[in-house]
Image (cartoon, rainbow, N blue to C red; front, side, top):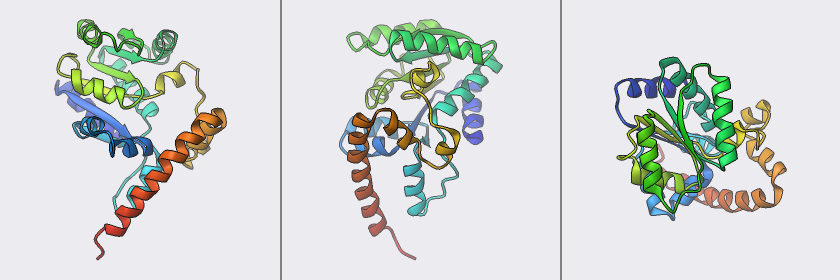
Length: 231
């Protein structure tokens, strides 16, 4: 986390455009069948793992992964960085009520934070107008809370038109910040059990999702393990 915040901070200070993405089990699975999503993720300048399943899988395959970098935590750290340096921020995504509440909460959490604009995530009839609004706001950091693959594809299509130095997809972070969705207790986060907490909140929808994506991820992981070079 510290390394990520420091590296992004250096890039923003140098006015070097930086596109960030987090990957979890679901995103890795969907990348296998969605070529546009896969291209969007691979086009990013920095990738963090937000999902203990991916951390454990990477370690099983011999990759040195220090820790999970949760998107919601990175979002909060970068807001603190923006407030400290006077960087303006734009929030994109969620319902009109959620994004407005998120802006309010973020200003309360971080004294001096400049949120120069925000917009809900239901704008697919006129993406160009939203891109223009982001540019006109003068924001240097853009956080996009839209479901995958829509957010990755939107960012990839419009990143040259947005006028920002940094852009990050933050998934359901606005729902958490606005108090619409509760986050798992810290001990569950540390044990990699946030998925179980989400299942408890939305059992019917989440069980179906996790059963589908986790089983496909297990097959991917097994194939990769069987074909990895052996010393």
